[in-house]
Image (cartoon, rainbow over all chains, first blue to last red; front, side, top):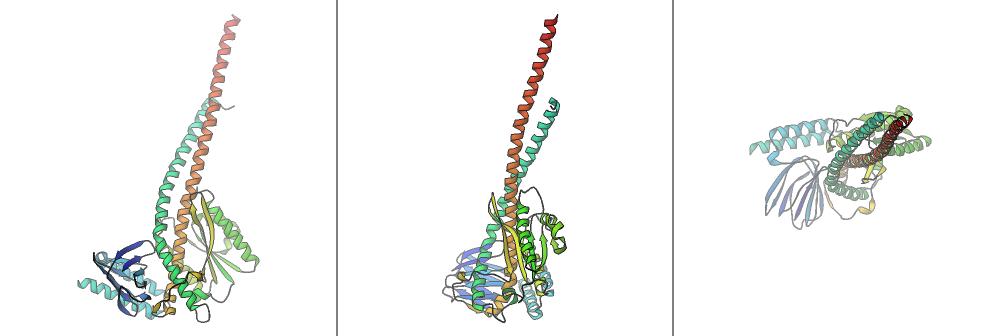
Length: 127
Length: 288
């Protein structure tokens, strides 16, 4: 299936994959060929596309994924390849997010997103 | 009749001006290419966003309980106009066309008894409208230091606008910018972003939404505003460079015409001076 990751500024990834692991807002899911059409909100996490040519993983901070039988299109405001997601980069993301959370009327959501992102940082540091 | 020396100086200075306008034209051409590339790269996101938003909006509808960014605040009293112009001049009618469109809209709103608020992006438009509409200014975004507009700039403007809307300081938000069509044609455009306007016909596939439709919609609406602001900024940047390029092309051509004319005058005066001297010498010799 075709995977596209697009950010507001450019198309980040366009490749053929056998499966795509998506950090959905209500739990992780894996999309494969023949998946029913779905629109899935993303929580901060790691999005991974596995294909014949290897696998690509990105840290995403939110957005959504549009899934259908033959393709996955991920619209993310920010997507950073995991290789580039150093602790310093993650700290910057966390700082941005707490800034955004300060003006978010929905405290619970903002706190949860922050915790998710902190978990991503911890997971990356563990490797 | 100016002296030969004056003419020579004049030709020299016009030649310098031509060099400068020629250089500016080439710089604008290079920047235009970059601006067009950015606009091109941003298109897939904006397009997908538009399709998804129309699908969601048409299924949720604008009835009771719909998000305010979609349904509006229920009033149509305070209009916030976001007027996007350039930070630098020498770009032909670029800023004037946007300002003209905005003026017409403001006059229309004021005549209808609405309250107008103006947020300016770029100082050229701000200067042009200050005398007539300065009292409506509520804010200004300075992008002087920004070499290449990024999504972060759009996000800042979008957050500001949404905050004003949430606090009840604005009911309707409209963006004013120039849409890029070609180097010689930029179309001044007024685009309403809040309440969001969608093309219902674009809605196609049925989706399973996770979490629910409303939750995704509420999450997406602010992003959609930011995306539209970003698109407008990019279109404006490309238009500015396009307008500057054609303005400088004209200036270069005019300078060339002027140099030709001045050179003709210079040559004639030179010949006249030589003829005069010859006549003087010959008549002097004959008198002997």
